[in-house]
Image 1 (tube, one colour):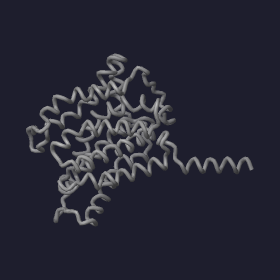
Image 2: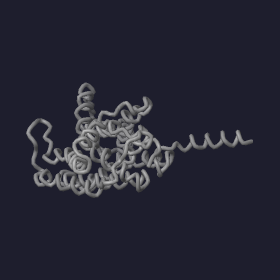
Image 3: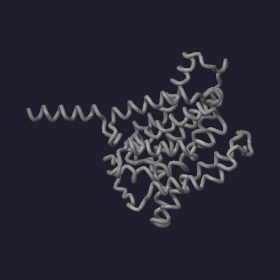
Image 4: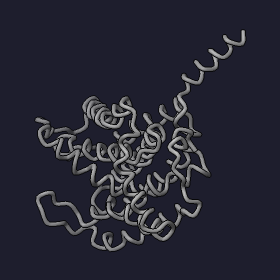
Length: 280
């Protein structure tokens, strides 16, 4: 488990079961999946399956209540507000990494001649509203994916493998709505992007002393960035974005190490060089 997560002093219950959490999340999602193609009322025309976002947090709360009682649930949900753990510098990737990936995606689509709107529109004035709404939506999910499941998996496996496991389940959980509403190629690109994004979320979590707020805010920025892609995401191509996000995840893994995603490679090298100079 990453050292800077351990520094928080938070104790993860040995009774926590990520497999039980994954199964319960899927079971709670079944009613929404049965009506996945039905649109919800309102101008956004979102499908019923969009309400699945409450299931990971609900599954985590149910299991924690069984394991630790009401106090455990309050502690789990309270982690959504643990922003004090985050060093100021880490807000840069939390807030701006995903918009940067989307900007690169737009440039790649433009360079490759993919169809784009002649008059691209980005809803700059409504982005702050999107940030708030998508943060709340992301928090429902990250209470489960990050708050419940990440630490128990990291106690047994590396940070990278933890991210790949959760990312694969996260992508599979979304797969039915994706396939119902889009092409198989679109769904495959979105799945690739989703797994890579989970690597980035675990990286941010482990470098912010285990902050669920950091994971929730980054999750929200993912959705803000996709919805802000011209025009309201209508020209968003997950294949292009998925490849770029994967490349970023590979660079992060190389620089911070697969074991913890929290040990800066060049920082370790400088420390080693300093020690050698002191010995000499």
